[in-house]
Length: 366
Image (tube, rainbow, N blue to C red):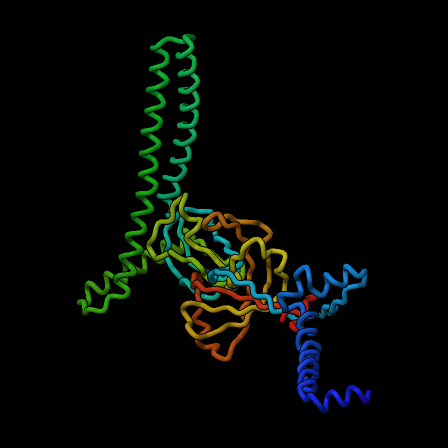
């Protein structure tokens, strides 16, 4: 020790060298060694890294373990749709006739059993023409069957051309008679329709007329009313409580077969029908809260909830299959404006649901 002290006293550079070695050692311990053990360093994953050295020495490699935690996520499901009635029930009436009075109009609220309009079957003349039309139709059906049977027999060579022509002429005559009876029946209805239209036009005419024409007009209107009441008028009533979604009936109109089913349609409840990708079907549930935005009400968000989910999958645009969910819109502060919501308004819907999921903590991702 005395020799070391004497050497240091003779050569002070030895202390400098010792200091340099100490500094290098301290820097290695404080700086290089933590970096050597850090997974973020490039050396860590090399063949000379800290895990590689521990593996060669047969020592376990220390790792950080972080347990997953439960976190709340907001899942949003969106779709497009429009306002429509949940049920659309057509009003059917048994008779063909002339509309004599219209009580309601499209968009009106109706109750079950409430009168929508009155229909007159056409009077005695129309009844006779109708019976004749049914008779001619029966004869036409019989002659048509005979004609078709004789035609097949002629094609097979069983009957002669003369017999076949006879059946063919009978069928053509029956067809002509049926057309005449049809024109007669509908002609009687059109005659009554013209009288109803003329009576309605005179009733609302505002220009001045002399006493004689006024008396004639009143007499004609009174006689028509008495005639209609005497022959019987059918009152067409609502079959359920709801709103008139379709109502294309006017006074004097002749209602005929084939087009009467969709002229009067009653809808029960006006809901929003939203279409979603079928992949979200399992995520939809009755009672789910939703937000609806209609294009006609910019800036207004409507609170709604799912009332019904259709289980039928439909083919949408671009070969995307969709399912439909029906939403009930709840009352808002701006209820007066929302009363103007009508069928056919387009919009989109958003369903936001909070779900608890197991997730990796954010500290483990940094």
